[in-house]
Amino acid sequence: QVQLVESGGGLVQPGGSLRLSCAASGNIFSINDMGWYRQAPGKERELVARITGGGITNYADSMKGRFTISRDNAKETVYLQMNSLEPEDTAVYFCNAQIRLRVWSALENAWGQGTQVTISS
Image (cartoon, rainbow, N blue to C red):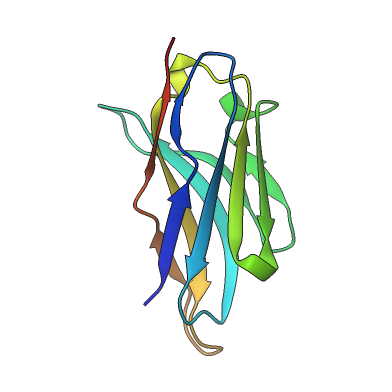
């Protein structure tokens, strides 16, 4: 059983910063891409940022320059540093990882339970 557990969400004022963490646990052989998505009320889930096992990153246009994704492969953890937060960034943020449980296994698409980020004065 694989789990992705997010932490670091909360309430912050506009212009503030937050750092999200997501740790994978379970009997994991390897993790390929990891990423963050978000879903605001009444909207579809959207990509925030992704990072490959080798550290290549990809960001949604509206997050470029404000958000930074990183990962610690030894800890099987992905981070999202969010700066210059705006009310429009309010959403539930979900961690995603492509996980291989055995050397011969297909990749599985795992999701965390989500962490609420609220930007408000």
